[in-house]
Structure formats: structure tokens, C-alpha cells
Image 1 (cartoon, rainbow, N blue to C red):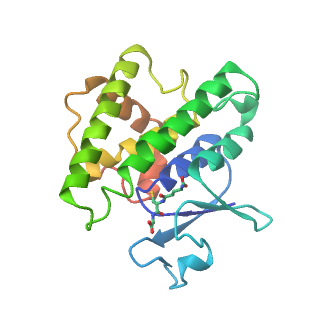
Image 2: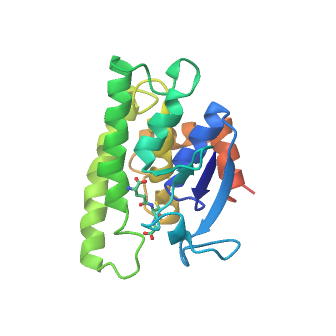
Image 3: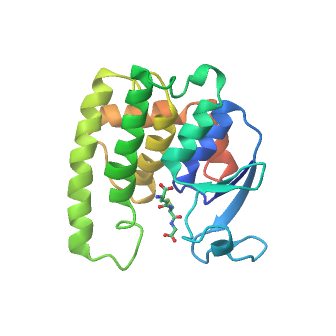
Length: 203
Ligand SMILES: N[C@@H](CCC(=O)N[C@@H](CS)C(=O)NCC(=O)O)C(=O)O
């Protein structure tokens, strides 16, 4: 498999899952500022929307959407441990968390906070909405270690998105349980390896 990624972007979730599951893959870096690969090829030839992640399967088929890619990969893991069998309560909890991260966190942060042209009033509204989500997560992580019970692919996704608080200097000191959660996920060897491979590891 081939993963098209940009350092620290939402593609980090898929990168983490590939490493958690020990699946063989090649990582191909995309410059999202220019939408080009390192060799100069236009990324829109790979991804018509210009988005990462794209996962290219061994038969050459290309697929996108973080939440779907994570489900696909987790189903290939031993005993579907990172997602749970179809029809199980575990699966419902993990897919519920994937949808929550996609629609209530990922697409609240982006595109608004990443684009310089976003009006300050919009940024303020986005930060307020995120603050309510962070407070909800803080209450959740006071009670449980991971977003859907045991560690799952939804944690890889939640971590990749919530980690943006560091890039965007959004304080979460008022949410100690959320802070501890990020540290807990960051400490996993697969997460450390993915961060290092993307040039984001601790020096
Ligand atoms: N719906 C897509 C969204 C992916 C997405 O927003 N990717 C961002 C990085 S986190 C991107 O590639 N942005 C580049 C751009 O806007 O041109 C998914 O969930 O995978």
C-alpha cells in the first residue's frame, strides 16, 4: 500500500493505524502549499480534491476519507481489535467516535483555522465551538482512558486532529484530562514512530 500524507495533517491518523497494525506501506509526502509531490508531480493527478490522505492499494485503486480508511485498515488487524467485529457494541462505539471526530472536530478545525483568509469573527466562533467539544472530551477522559473504551483507530484519528492545538497554540490547560489523553496516545510506540517519520518527533 502507498499512503499519500502531509506532515501533521489528518493523514497522520492513517499513518498511525498502518504502524499500529504492522502493515507494509510506502509513505509519499505531499506539499499541501503547492499540491505537488517531492518529484514535482501535481498531486491533483492523484487526488482530484487535492486532499490527503489517499491510500493506494496494491491493485492500484486509490481511496480517500480518513474514517473509511481507518475502518478498512482496522478490519485487517488481528481479531479486528482496533475496531471490533461487525454488529458488536465495540464496533458501534468506535464508528460513532470516528464520525464524531470527522464531523465535530476535524471539520470544525479545518478549513477555518488553517486558512489565513478566514475572518477573525469566524475564527472566534470556531474556537468557541471547539471549546465546548474540548470540555465534553475532558469530562469523557476523566472517566475513561480512550475515546471508545479500549484504544481504537478512533484514537489515532482523535489524536491527529486534537494535536493541532499545538500547531495553532490553542491552550488546553483548563482540560487536564484531555491533556493527559493526548500524552497517553502520544506515548504509544506506533504514534512516536509515525510522528518521527513525519519529522514531528521530539528532538
Ligand atoms: N473529508 C476528507 C478531508 C481531508 C482533509 O481535510 N485533508 C486536508 C488535510 S487535514 C487537506 O488535504 N487539505 C488540503 C487542501 O485543502 O487543499 C477526509 O476526511 O479524509
